[in-house]
Each structure stands twice: as C-alpha cells, then as structure tokens.
Image (cartoon, rainbow over all chains, first blue to last red; front, side, top):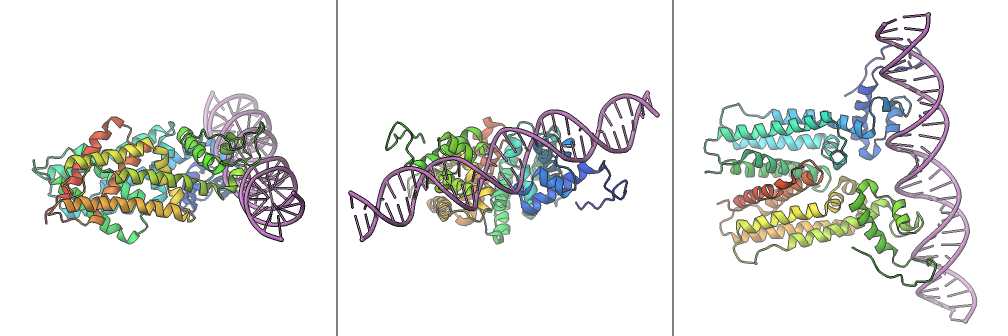
Length: 212
Length: 212
DNA sequence: GATCAATATAGACAGTGTCAAGATTGCTTG
DNA sequence: CAAGCAATCTTGACACTGTCTATATTGATC
C-alpha cells in the first residue's frame, strides 16, 4: 500500500520517465478514495499528488473509468481471499459457529474496506458497459468461490435439500445488503453489527439444514 | 409525475416569476435521473430544460444535495406505501404465499424505480451530514412500517420465537441486497428475479416459523 | 548512431457547482 | 394607493473537473 519505492534513476531533478507510475497511480487512487471518498478522487489531484502532469495518468489508463476498474479489481482479489478462507476443514461437519465466523468476516471486510467495497459494487462501474474483461473475470471468480463454499457446506450436511446456486444468490444478497446498509450510513448502529451478523448466520444455518 | 400545469400568468413572454418552479424542478430532476442516470443530472441542465437561469434553482434548494434530498424524500414516500400494503388481513394467518408476494413487490419496486432507489439508499445522501430532517423522518417511518409488518406476521404465528427487530433488519438486508445487485447491474440475469425472490421468501417463512 | 514507440508535457475546451451583485416582481403595510 | 421589503430570477465570475490535441523527451531497437 505504501509506496516508498526509490526512483529507478535518482537524478537531482525528477526524471522525465517516471518508471513506476502505473503502480503508484493505483496506490494513490486507493489512498485518496479512503481518505476523501469518491468525490475526492480526481485525475488531476491524483497527478498532482504524484508530482506529475495532469494528463500523465492517461498513458496508463485510458479513462477515469479504467482507473476505477483497476482499483476495483484489486478489491475483488482481496474479497476472494476473504471468502476463500473459511474456518472449516474440507469434508468435516460444519457448525453454526463456523457460518457465524464466515458472515462476520464478510461484513467486517466490507467495513474495513468500505471505499473499495463501494467502488466494487457501485452502479458506476457495472452500468458503464466498458468495464475491463479482467475485472469481469475477477468478480466472477469471487462469486464462483462463494458458490463453492456453499456447495461444500451443503455436502457436509447429509440430508440438505437446498439448491446451492439459489441459496448462494440469496445469502450473498443478505451479506451484501447488510454491508451496504452499514457502509452507506443507513444503519448507524455499528454496535449491533455482530448481533445482526449472528442473526443472519442463524438464518443461513437453519436454511442449510432444510430436510428433504 | 407529468407536469402539464398551465402557467399561472400566461403572458406572451415568460413571466419573470415562474410561480411553480420548485415543483417543476423536482419533477424534472426525477425525469432526468430516470432517463440519463445520476451522471446526467446537473443543476445547469436542469435549469436549462426548464427554461430558467442556471442559478434559479438555488432559490428553492440551497444545494444540489438539498435537491437530491427532496427527490429521495418522495421516493421514500412511495416505498412506504409499497411496504404498507401487504396482501394479508390483520389478525388472520399469513401464508408463505403472502410473504412471497411481499418480497416480489419490494424487489419490483426497486427495479421499477431504480434511479429513485439508488438515490434513496446511496452513500452520497447518508454520509453527507446535511440530509434534511424531513428526509430522515421519512426514511425512518418507512422502516418503522416495515417492522410493524414483521411484528404483525410474527403475531399471526402463535409459536413464533423470533426477535422482530433483528429479523426485520436481516430480512430487509436481504431485500436491499437483492435489489441493489439487480439495479446496479451485477446480477444481470433478470429472468431469475422471481425465482430468487421466492427463495428469499421461503427462507423468511421458515425463519418466522422457528419454534420455541 | 538513427529510429521508433513509449511516456511525459502544456494548452485548450466544454462542462460542472456555487458564490456575489444586481434586476424584477408580488405582497404587505402605512 | 404608494412605499418598501422580501422573495424570486438574472448575469458574471471563479475554481474545479475529465479529456482531447499537439508537442517534447526518453529508453530501447535495428
């Protein structure tokens, strides 16, 4: 995140070619997003903070949109790791407690990386019709991993009768909805996060145990 | 929505005082939002479309933010009506079918009024720290009505053991999450809306029936 | 060492929100 | 009915935005 990389050719004056600009742009964009919100992230300010001309970033990202895609992509990579690391052992029975941990972790991620999350799932990105292919696959992969999780849970319960895909969609909706309501400042009662998460986990758990 | 109101004083030239501007601003804002999205809604274009100077709207709304609050407020009034009109008779038993109708109606509302919904629940509004009091109460009322619904459902089931507030929060999260994923263009499979809604309804229903 | 593509730059344009100062109007009060 | 006042509308201006074009500098390649 912090970019203290020494300039490749450290002449007294700034070198004409930056060398590491693309990486630094992504980092600074994430920083700006975190500190000042989406409204505070502008191409010009970005360039200025990096000590570079206003149009320099356009040689690494065709658009502001493309830049946002780049940032969001990194967010999805992080999210996938969160989803992929459940507290259960493959093949073993899962417990309600493990579902609880899973839910809490998802929500916690969305809160800790609120700006990322907002960008990743914002209409700005998905309705733009020019979101990069790499972003699309990255996001798709994240959801695929999620479905795999559900499927593993389901298989660990012998008599479960749920449709894994449908359940994945709906449960993800719940997680996403909670996260957004919290992030966007609609549910202000942050102290209730854990209770809400546990309530959701309980609901999921009972759903998983639906007998045939 | 349509404003075909005849001008109060219809002289040949435009009258200096518009007379009905505030109302027309709100309508045109909603229209612009619907047709061109949030990016296409600017104070200047708004004024131009209404044949009025760029700063005229500022005499009716201190801010662009204030205008958005005004539009969102109307959205919440509509939403409240959707939530308030369930297909059940007070005191009578509810059925899974009635829950299904309820879920479908909520999601349908969010899709039909996508731009409203996006505005109503956007971080832009809720994090601004200057959202109007009337908006706050309007939104609060909508959620209160929702809780009342849950409570009524609960009471119609004799042996229900759920915490109405918690369940309201989580189930609303599910509805909100589904709506946003659909609206924001992340779930592109619109044909699956009804199946997803029904899956969610089933989950709610089973949760409501939690025995003590 | 010349050439070329990659990378950086300044200049310009249309668009934005919004502040300040002045013009026009309708309502109120003497 | 006239005066005045507050509400409403206007033009002008400022700083800011994304992004296009044309130009300059560089590192790598033949």
